[in-house]
Amino acid sequence: MAMCFRLGVTVPALVLLTCAAMGFGIPRGLASGVAFIVNSSSASISVIDMTSRREVRRIPALREPHHLVLSPDGKSLLVGDTVGNQIMFLDPATGAVQRRVTVSDPYHLAFSPNGKLLVVNGLARNQVDVYDAAAMTLIKRFAVDSTPSHLDFSPDSRFAFVSLQGSGKLAAFDLKELTLRWTEPVGPAPAGVIWWRDKVMVAIMGADYVVVADPATGKVVHRIVTGKGAHTLFLAPDKKIMWVNNRASGTTVSLDAETLKTIRVYNIPGGPDDIDFAPDGTLWITRRFAEKVAILHPDTGDFETIGVGRSPHGLWLNPAAPRP
Image (cartoon, rainbow, N blue to C red; front, top):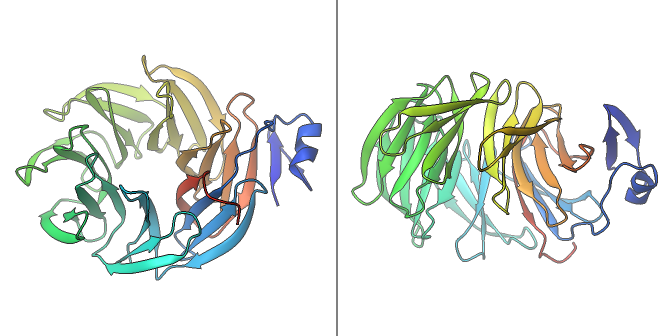
């Protein structure tokens, strides 16, 4: 059942209209469609009806899925099952399993902006793999030190930037030459990576800040304090706000995307991890330690919560999908 939150008080709600009547800021135009939530410790993917805010289906995985990404043609949702050494291809509207492909340790995965390459971080096996996206064939394997975590690309698809969580470094891979260009220290246990404007931003999970690095050299040029356990970064669809989840402090922070100054800090207990954005203006946030997903209303700071599986991690929203 959905719950409403205000000033740290949990209020049960039989229906969302109850929340609205109580003044808890539920917007008028609720999002429709389906949401996919990856439950790492439950080895499953929850499918949520975005209108009713209820789980309608749970798709079994093999061992331990973590992240997911939509294919460039929009026809498949890829879920990496790292311990199961498999990528599941799901129908992004229904969740039906289309096929399963054996892939070594697919912890974090992302397609290059031009859609030609799929880069897969093997966190447990200390490897970064480059695949031909269309054929799903391995082009190049890089051995790294150590525990490659998150990744993002330069807009021209030339470089992939990977956080090396175990060594406190950021690595740049030249995808044209298929070489490791550089590795540079950025802070303890770096995690989320995002390209923004002409820089690379990295969340430093072993500290309380985000760094801004020069993509040509990896040198840190700026630090932004956001909260303990700074873990992931997400750019809003209108590109006006950069969102940062701080897992240890249980906060989500909005930064002005132009100045990178803090706008607001939201309390989201239970290890906020990944974010996706709904058309109604809400943010869906997995709470890694709480077996919940929060739906944040950024104008009020209130949030609803939906129960899912153990250790919810990656999530993806498909508001265009028909209601299940």
